[in-house]
Length: 242
Image: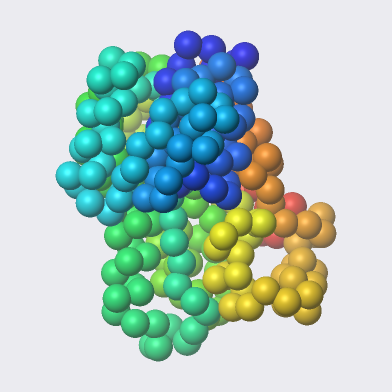
């Protein structure tokens, strides 16, 4: 119960890594808001949390999410910026402008918007966790603009950590390798045994990241056990970035 009496917002928590993080934070004692553009009611009911529909790329929607959390709890201790999208693998000049805008709105602007709306309600001892990617550390061809958005998030994490340290608010990130989530097919272009085998051959531990892996790492970084850790972008990647 490392997070007993803590409150947490997890974006993109209706499925995939976000659901794994929400489940683990709840298991460690936190009261969790499952915030997603999709319906997160099932996960929220499972963990005894709140469900909130949000479009993290829209200021008014993020403000409504924040207001709902404050109305329910009166404070916000943990914010996990997990919501993210990608574009399909393609040469960098062939990704559409609409796909580029969507990737940066969801992956980057969302961090700006949650900082604007949620951060004013966080106090000393609070924690922000951004879910970046190994793509921001060791980029692969044909995912250029997704790679760039996650590199942006890594840099944002570090600069947020420096600026917020005097306020006692820690900011860290997780860099997962691809996992069994709804985005897996988009990363690979197609989901076949052959493409999976090729991808897994680049991961020394020989498997994808799981929602449970992400939840375990998130629970530690958001807990007081990590009270001296800020500005860290932790790979959860089975050695992919070595």
